[in-house]
Amino acid sequence: MRQLRQASLALLALVLVSSAAFAQRPRARSAPASQRALWELGFDSQLSFGLDDPRVTMLRIPAANFRAGYWASDVLSIEPFFSLTHINVSGGGSASNYEIGAGGLYHFSESRVRRQFYVRPFLTFVGSSVSGGGGSNSDVGVGVGGGVKWPKLGGRMALRGEANIETINSSTAINLLFGLSFFTR
Image 1 (cartoon, rainbow, N blue to C red):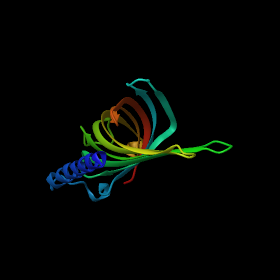
Image 2: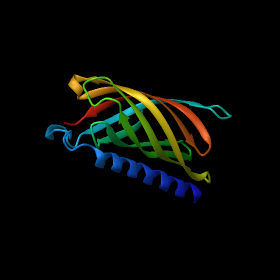
Image 3: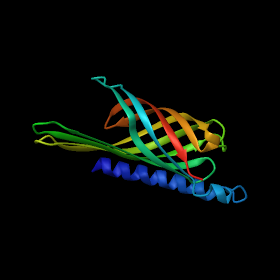
């Protein structure tokens, strides 16, 4: 119950910060009609290095997660993400893992046609279920990362690299992400 309360408070803080940032953007600099309702759709590969004992290294390719970022202003986007893994073993047993989260990206440049550096705090809900009496488990995680987007095709697409640190249930990992983003206009 304590984790659910912490997750709720963290999600509320993320919503309040993003709402305040959206409300404070200058009206004279609002995006032109062609850039309103801009979405960034993408996926990332992940290389993860666990920092706790036992140390676990994990590689997830080609897509560790899928994300859909909504641009609330010229420099702020809110980005929910999702991941699902299901393993089925012949002869009986299966396991499922999921991750649902949201991050807030602050970009240090307004231009999507130039290289953009960003910082991304995020909140994640992770869970697993194992059949055959293995039970299920869920936890809340928090993290912060920084990265860069390299635009391609005149800003319609971007390569994206990020390094972040994430803590889930007192386990900490350093993650390296590399992905592709596609922008709507």
